[in-house]
Structure formats: structure tokens, C-alpha cells
Image (cartoon, rainbow, N blue to C red; front, top):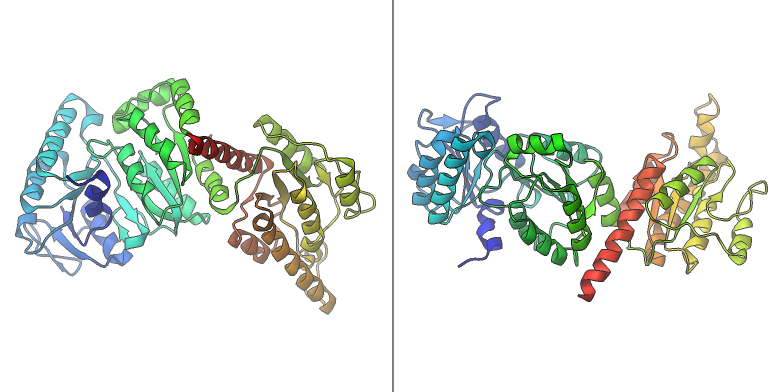
Length: 482
């Protein structure tokens, strides 16, 4: 018998896809689900199925999946729930091994829907068909240019996003993509009638295109298995999770949404700690945390140095300590060395290191960051993205033209930003940055992001990202010793 991972290959790596319920009417599920794989550049065969049509979007349309002369790896059912048992039976007869059930109207609506869902599961399991859903928005797989959900193609990247919600999950994926977070996969898992969150985690754990897994989850069908798999997965890939249904009102909503039992918040948090899952406090925080985990080395401890100006350092220090990070005071030798790199009017550096409101280029800030990273009692640094000289000058005058001397200053500063971007790799310690002003030069930000340095908009986001790096380092070290 094939393993679960191999059983899921027809879903994520199909050579051919049948869209059952294909439609010629824009806006209908049958149209969108057919249109997307055509436009995404899927290289396999696509077969529309609808007994009332002969052609859709330039493709021959078949009356039934049984009329398709070639093998079909994956069937996507966009038809109403009541038709699903009959259509699943035809998929079994065809020899199709993977399916995606888009329609709602199953266990999430009550007893009759639950009976219908169980009937479909029984037919599929007797015939060896594994399926996603029902009540799902579909899937997207960057490696195969396979888009089987109504959303536009997402930005490709290393994050696999598994969402129990379809509409909300799709919105999260779109927003993540728009803000620069690349996805390897988007999977809307729906009711988990057949394949569960555990199955998707087991599959993604072996996926070479994925470096980190993000979950939006409301409830588990097999929680113990999920957490056991997670404990193994985090040895090589971090898992970030945001759970819906953590309040009484939210728990009630999950039953009518995806027929899930939300479970106790305290039990869930305890299991996350034991399994090494990193919890996010809001939906988009998942992706902001993931950015740090993808690009930065893991810290050897939880002792953080902060560099900034005035209130920035104060607020960041508060955020770090409130999350259990340490902000140790610099020893006299380190303080003396760093003092020489600061403006004359700056206060003695203790940690945070205060530039006292002075404009500093990257070539001036990077040596301070390096001094901090060299310290054996500092495990990571939170600093800000430096301004370029010309950007600073343009912000303080009406003349928009740069002089020759300003261009030379920018050139030196550019070398400084490359120097700053190289430091995490050199010292194998993370650097997290705050974008202090909207004026900052995009070329600077691009260089830092290409080096894997995450950039955030608030001190709290910086602290949470650093906390996630610390947590994952501790989780992984503990898991590898077991």
C-alpha cells in the first residue's frame, strides 16, 4: 500500500486535471476553477466536464469523466453537494486517485450534510481516492504552475500556507503575496473529511520547495497525530500556527464554518509548547514571523542588543523583555569601544545603544552592529534601516537635485548597507530591522531583504520576530536531543 505522501501526489503533482461542473459563465465556480489552471501555465492536460456543453474556453468539454479517453490524475468537483456521491463513484470507476471537493453543504450544515459527507468518504476510500475538502477554495502549487482556486497566482516562495478557511485563508495568502511573502503552496483544507491537517503536514515535511509551514487552523480531526508529526517536522522546518476559535464565540462559529471542534485554548497552547509550534497572535503575524525564520540564522540564546534612537530603544526594550527576551547591559570594555563610534553628544552606550537623534549612514551604523554581534553575551541585534544621505537631504529641503558630493556619499553608504547585510552570516547571529521612516531608500531595503534580513514597521513586530527565532532555536535543539 502506498504511503500517505505518495497517495497525495496525484493532487499536488497531477499530469492531468478534470474540472467537473465546468462552466462558460464568468463568476461561477466551474468557470473560475477551469480558467485559473489555463492562465497559470499548468503544463498538464485539462479536461472540462459538463453534459450541457461541447466546448469551454477553447477546450473540448466531456459529458462525464468516464468519457475522457485518457487517464485523469485529479478531479475537481465544482458541483452541488447532492451530486457528489454519484460523481465520486464515476471518479472511482475512471481510476482517478485524487480529488478536490469545492462545494459546501456537508457536515458544517448539520446532520444530513454529515451523512452525505460520510457517504462520499466511504465511496472514495473503497476506490482508493484521496481528496481535499469538501467546503474548500482549492489549492495552488507554485512548482507545477497549478492554480485550482479562484485567486490570482500568488508570489512564489518558500512558505507553504495551509488554511482551514477558504475565503479568509485566500485573503491572507493574497495579502501575504502582495507584501512580498512568497508561497510554495496554498491549501484550503475545508472540512477535512478525508485528508486532514496532519496529512498535509506529513506531505509538506518532505516537500523540497517548502522551507517553513504556516497554518491557520480552527480544529483538528486527529490532534495527537498532528502534534507528533509537528515534533518531528520542526527538526528541519519551522511551523507557525494561528488558531481560530480560541474564544467561546469563535468556537461556536467554527462548527458552522468547517464543522470543527475548536478545543480548549489552554490545552492547545500546552501542546504547541510541547511540539515546538510557534504561535502567532494575529493572522498576518504568521507571515511576518516566517520572514525572519526563513532568512536569519538561529540565535544561540535569548540575549538581545538594541540600537536606535531615544524612544525607539525604550519601546523595543520593553517589547523584548515582555516577551521573555533579555536585554543585558554592556560591559565597560564594550561600552568604551562603541562610544567611539557614536556622536559626541550621544549618551554612554548601555543597551539599548542610543544615537541621540543623529542622522547616521549605514557605513556608520554597521560597525556598531558588528561590535554588538562580536560579544559572546549578545545573541542577536535589533536595529533600524539606515537612511541614505540623499534621501535625508531631500526630506529636509525643497531642492530635489543631488550634487556630486551627495552622490559620493550615497556610494559610500551603499557599501555600508552591503556591509550591514553581510553581518548575520558572518557572525551566525540574527539581525532584525525596524523601518523607522517611510523615506528610506528602497534600494537599501531590497539589499537587506535579499540578504534575508526582515524589516518591520513597529518595535513590537521586531521583538516578536526575534522571539520566534529564539523559540524555534530552543524547540529544535530540544527536539534533536530526544
